[in-house]
Image (cartoon, rainbow, N blue to C red; front, side):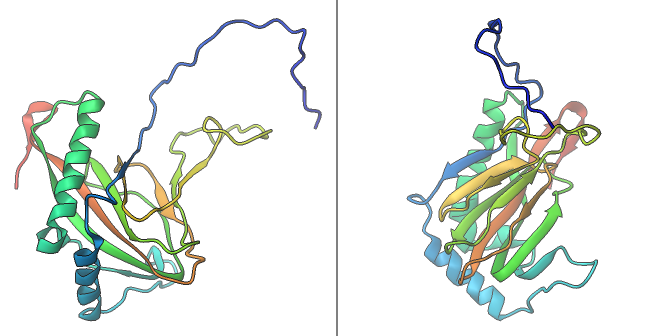
Length: 221
């Protein structure tokens, strides 16, 4: 294929980009705010008292990974983290101009990924925003990967270079203390843990309480 290179003598027309229906995710640094010690200890206790979830062909989306129950929002050890995460998520909705009364964590769970562990592509139904906080991140433990949700698969050009405009997957490097908040419908996966230690994270879903969009639609506990 012949690549047509831009020519210096071609006319240049002033322009600006139009961000049409952008998909936004947000990264917050909580390393100096949240003490991971009590959370890691509680996750270790829960893990010792339960059976690890392992991958079975064509059934479970995880591989070499332990996942807790999804009601960790009731655990006192996680209260400071989820309080901070809720404040962060509320700031996201205000920044984007949404009207809401408050946010509530409806589900929360821990993930422990051993070397070789990964998590297949998925999204989080029945929620508005989701988030993940990284508690322990050994080197090489794998990116959080977001998949392009747009129906643009009918035609894709070859790429001279990968940019945010033409990428099909955008990865986020995990860091201890990093919180990532994103729309729950956005497809994402976790790359293989190629490190020598366990990657430990806490994930959660949030829903607005009170009126949602229309006077007749509301969410209460």
